[in-house]
Length: 164
Image (cartoon, rainbow, N blue to C red; front, top):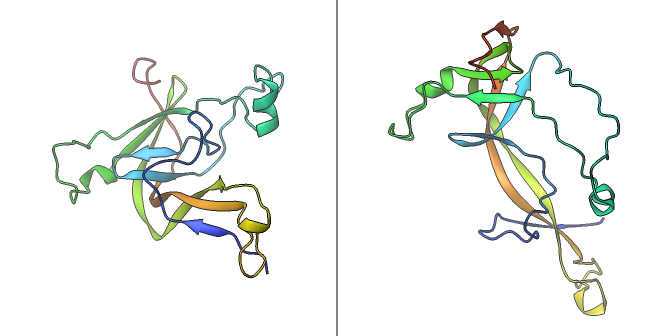
C-alpha cells in the first residue's frame, strides 16, 4: 500500500514565497474557519478562466479570484480574554453592495487539518525508504480548522455605505 509522509506544522513554510497552492481561507479571531452557506452565490461569468495569467500560473492550476464579500465580527474586541466567546454569536457577511447575511460561529465536533504538498529531494536510490517507498512527495499540515461560520437564513437588504 502506498504511503506518504505527513509532517506536523512547521514555523517556516517549505513553499516558495507567493506560491501557496491553498485557496485563501476564512480567517476569524480564533484562526481559520469553514464558511457554510445555505444556497449559492452567483458570480459574473469570466470570459476565460485563465485570462490574465502567465503560462506558468495556468500550468500550476491558478485561476482568477472573485471576491465574495466582507466578513464582520461586530462583538469582537481584541481586549477581551481569549476564553470570551460572546463574539461568536453574531457574524455578518456583506455580499455585494446591498445584501447582508447574519450568522454565527460554531465549534466543529472534530477539527479538520488543512494539508499541503511538500516536495522533497528527487527520488533516487539514496532517498528510497527501507520498504521501497519513495520519499519524494510529502505532505505538511498547514493549519488546523476548529470552527465554522454558519449562515442559515436569507440575506437582508442593507444600504450601500455599509457593504463592501
